[in-house]
Image: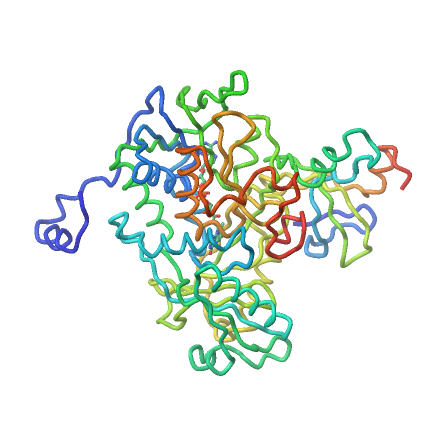
Length: 95
Length: 416
Ligand SMILES: Cc1cc2nc3c(=O)[nH]c(=O)nc-3n(C[C@H](O)[C@H](O)[C@H](O)COP(=O)(O)OP(=O)(O)OC[C@H]3O[C@@H](n4cnc5c(N)ncnc54)[C@H](O)[C@@H]3O)c2cc1C
């Protein structure tokens, strides 16, 4: 698989390590009402779709940036690559 | 029809005209006491033990393709019970004991071969960890032996014990481990279950569950609705997709694992050997091919095929310990979809929906578990109580903090 890094261009996927579903960006509020249930869900439960999946990849052997890659788990086709920091900011995070 | 040496000779002399299909091809009935979804090793073993040990005959196994086309027919066939933790080791040892009597139990030659498995040690820390694991195994009634480099050299003279980066410092052997003909496991269980009245329904995909007031009443399939008193799901890599139909989210990610086989060679490798510094394991099939594999690719996938970086990594592992392998040509490679759980251990439990039961999270180690998984799942389905060796495999253990994490790497499926 080739990941088209937004800053560096096409890079081999072996330069990256994989974390998982991009929903891991949305860390629950530890002071929220159902914090325990929300953290259980966040830490352990996954949609695990067969098809398009937004996921976090870390450019470990490169510029060490986190990316959100939209990839099809049935074909390994990649349709979109974004900087995770941009995605987080659009979702209202400060960093 | 019972299989025997006598039968083989008789058929040979009479033109092989007396063999019958090993199982029927029944039409689905409208209702079964127990419906098992997934005709892999685990589903078929469950059906066999339900019929044989728990007296349940109105059972169906529903398979979307053909039986044995999933991971049970794709794995590297290694069986062993060399686990550390109390939640796991009694279960895997129970499984190994069932393997030892499997062929007599099924009247089927599954080519169970206890040729031994050796986990190589490459550092002092690893030796300490393996001694601890070996002691854990012995405490649970399994066999384990710490081997010195000299003893290993004698048994496997071709191993590269003096590699500059990963010298071999010893090994943990389990002599009762080995390999089994994987397809024969599916066929043997299928034949035995069928002969006891279980309907094995192939080319029938489960497309939904009929759930009324929190009770599962049966399954919707590509061949119509099939009613059931209880539904047991054993679909391995498809667990997330299948249970998603019941609106459940699981502590599981589906990942791809690749396997490789070389051209047929004269007998060179007497047992199963695993490299302890990277991830590489290898055995030789009775046909002569070296069967080997390594790490999962490491990203979610349902593609049943992997990518080249892992091929390179596996071959590097091979060259580090078996330089002689460099001359062999690769014949085939393939991938299977693994149900990687959040702690690397499986789940055999009820769900919050009455009548719906789940068996999954086998990661890349579920082949060796096939007999015990079938037995324990049958026990749970028939008696509504977990089997004594499978009490730790609860679905709620993640929420309650009772993880069974052999490697201690946490909730990161691609590290298990
Ligand atoms: C390359 C590779 C190497 C491996 N090596 C080893 C090893 O050396 N040792 C070891 O112990 N384990 C190994 N494993 C793991 C082991 O193969 C699996 O954990 C185990 O086979 C899974 O259980 P199963 O046999 O029931 O799965 P499967 O054979 O995958 O059975 C699941 C079945 O469910 C069916 N199904 C899915 N969805 C539906 C639906 N909606 N309706 C109806 N049917 C459905 C599928 O078609 C499939 O036939 C390996 C796996 C792979 C892929």
